[in-house]
Image 1 (cartoon, rainbow, N blue to C red):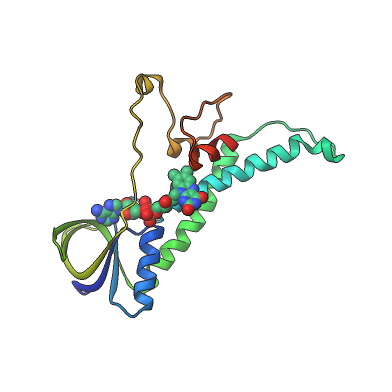
Image 2 (image 1 turned 90 degrees about the vertical axis):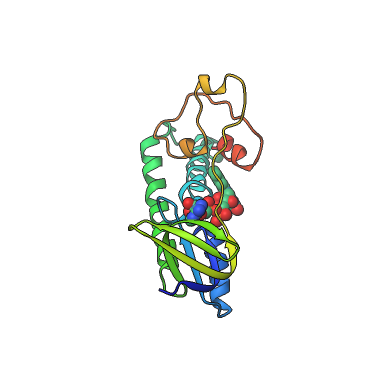
Length: 192
Ligand SMILES: Cc1cc2nc3c(=O)[nH]c(=O)nc-3n(C[C@H](O)[C@H](O)[C@H](O)COP(=O)(O)OP(=O)(O)OC[C@H]3O[C@@H](n4cnc5c(N)ncnc54)[C@H](O)[C@@H]3O)c2cc1C
């Protein structure tokens, strides 16, 4: 693999993949460096996709609970948290496999490792399979995503709480829940 690219993307999530696809499509010599423990990015692994699988389970539970309104006899016997989580894991596994295929299809180079800038046109990459590489580029797309930031609320740490990663991967459902926040993710969790 070359050590100089016209376009170098740091981060192999949705933004990084999309940017690399566009650049490669325009004929630029492109690479993506991804340092996540799993390939797929937030949307597939812990964001959009898993939250929609849970929402769908919630929608279907509601339909069963309200079946009598529509002249249907149905007994709602509650959620099976383990089955809901297993379905979610299976589906995101399929999406992640698909994304892995897109990233390794050969349209651009895909490098597994953590990048850090040395100067405006150079990164050092700690490779996952050992060693390091120094890579230069004409232009960079920094698409390194985000990390969960626990809110600074007095007493919160002591009380114990779930963040969205934990809520999306739990195999149990609490009997009641208070959602802190009123953004899109909070509303999805509340709807579920
Ligand atoms: C519960 C939930 C539901 C959501 N639902 C939706 C939705 O319905 N619709 C929507 O549009 N958005 C949704 N989002 C938001 C969406 O998931 C994110 O905005 C999007 O996935 C961010 O993509 P990204 O490519 O910017 O970052 P990421 O997918 O986080 O990718 C960044 C990658 O860069 C890697 N990286 C970081 N630092 C380095 C480094 N130094 N070197 C190499 N690699 C590095 C990371 O490990 C990671 O693999 C949701 C988010 C959550 C949490």
